[in-house]
Length: 323
Image 1 (cartoon, rainbow, N blue to C red):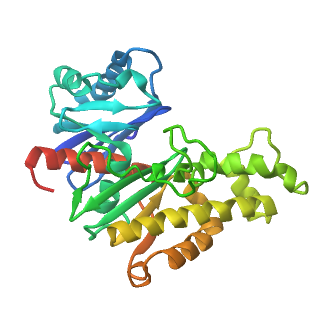
Image 2 (cartoon, one colour):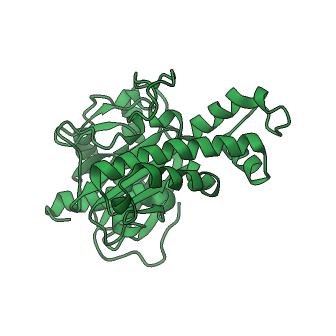
C-alpha cells in the first residue's frame, strides 16, 4: 500500500477493481490523482460475503487516517444493471450474481456505493485522464484474457437499453470459423484478438512450423510475443492473424459509430508492433475511407489504473449529476 505524504484536502473516492484474480483498491481525488493504493488476491469461495469483508477491510485501512471519502465505486468483470445496482453476470465471480452488493456495502461502509462494468470504467478513465482526453465520442477496446469494450457517446457512457452495450469482444468477425465462444456464439472477436487467442492459435499451428522456437508446454502470450520479436515465423503469423481480425472488428465499429478515437488497452497490447500493421491495413480496406482517415486509433495511457480512475469519475458523476 502506498501512502501519500500530503493527502489531498479535496473529497476522495474509494475505487475498487474487483477482478477474478486480484482485488485492487485506491483512493482517488477530484483531480484524478491516486493517493493510496493496495493490491491483494480476490477472496475465493461460494459466498459473496467473503468479497464484501475484503472490501470493507481494505476501506478500513484508510478509515483511521480520517481522509474525506465521499463514495465507493466498484467495477466488476461482468454485466451490471446500474439502475438496480446488481451484478447480472460475472463468470469469474459467480457469487456476486444477483447479490445486493451495493446495499450491503452501503450498510457496512456508510458511503454511497456505485457499481460499474470494468471495461466501461476503463473507457471513462481514458476519456478523463488518458489517451481520449478532450474527446466526447470514444470507443475503448481492452485486449486481455478476453476482449472487453466501452462506448462513450456525446461525453456519456452508453450502456444500452438493457445494460449490455459495448460487448465488442462478442461481435462476430468470422461466422464460418467453427470456433465456439463461451458466450455461445461462433466466430467472436475474442476468439482471435485476445491473449487466450494468441496461445490457442500458436498451439494449433505448432506442427506446421517445426522450426519454431515455441513449445506447447507453458505457452503464454508473452512468450509468443518475445518469439515474434526475435523473428519466429509462427509467432509473427499468429500476430498478423490477430491484427487481421482486430482490424475487421475496428472497421465495423468505425462504420457503425464513427468515433473520434478508439483506445486500445490490455496486456495483449504489448504486441502492438507485431499486430498493428495488419490491423491498420484491414481498417483501411474495410472502413469508410473518409471516416477512417479521421478516426485516431491509439494505445491507452492510463495502464492498469484506467478502470480505477473511471470508477472514481463515475462516482462523482453519480453524486453530483454532472460529468
